[in-house]
Amino acid sequence: MELSFCSKYPFTREAKELMSSAKVDDEFQLNELAKRRVVAAIKDGKIPFVSIELDDSQLLMQVASYAVSRVIISLLKSRYYTNRYAIAEAKRAGSYMQSDSDENVLHAAKELGVECEIDGSYGVKFQDYLRYAPKSVDYKLVNKKLAKGIVRLRRDGFVRLLEEAVKMKIESELPLNTDNATAAMKNAADAVKAGIPKEPMPINVPLERGEFPPCIVKLLEDLKTVENLNHTARWALAVYLLNAGMKVDDVVRIFSTSPDFDERVTRYQTEHAMKRGYKVPTCSSMDSYGLCVADCGVKSPLGYRRGRVGRSTA
Ligand code: SF4
Image (cartoon, rainbow, N blue to C red):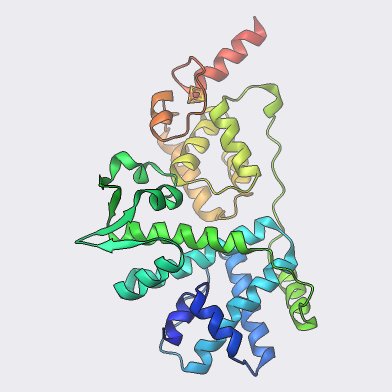
């Protein structure tokens, strides 16, 4: 595979093999590039897209910067930063995949353990689909074409699946053992730490009062344990909290612990939900979104809260 392939998909075996034999002379520039890569991933949630028209030495530098970035992120010793970094790397790879050749995308997919056959659409094995499909109503199996154990996807859906696979691969490989990290890498990690936002503190929502229904408790706990909630889950949680009387600022603060948190987007969506006066989804809708986790005997998650209040004041 070409150097440009390794630059676009530095998590692949080819890229690792390349780095085991290649030598980068300018260590200073390499550490600077890796620092920028990590800071951009954590601060902005995305890694700048670089042209594949770069010359070979610049492409090699890109691949090497991925390797050094992984050491830097490991030195930060934070699951939150690691997850945020993995998401940004996955989005970067997905951006390339959107316009790359089928040959390259299928090759990267194979490296990620996702076999695919193209027959007008992208056919993925049922098991791979279940493993990597985003947890969103759009990706529920009932909304997909499934025949003979193969799920058929359009290219954007296939790439989204692969982004999830890239994220999981990177997260599973980190942190690295940093015993052999050079002084320059440690300095780079210190500089990164000084240039990124502090890790958000979990917001204490009074779960112990038993006010919240199990589905909402689960979503709040997923946020605390740095799980990435999909769009539907975020929307349901935000709408529930607003309807339960929470202010927009407090809802935004609750979401700030999520690794893919983007304050501007979260605030916009929360204010939008407030202005439109969205109602909390019914329990049967929550069930169809895959968000119902218990049989509470109510029709709406808000009904559970009212039931609790009613019981405690009776
Ligand atoms: S039954 Fe309703 S309130 Fe209870 S977990 Fe399911 S969606 Fe939530």
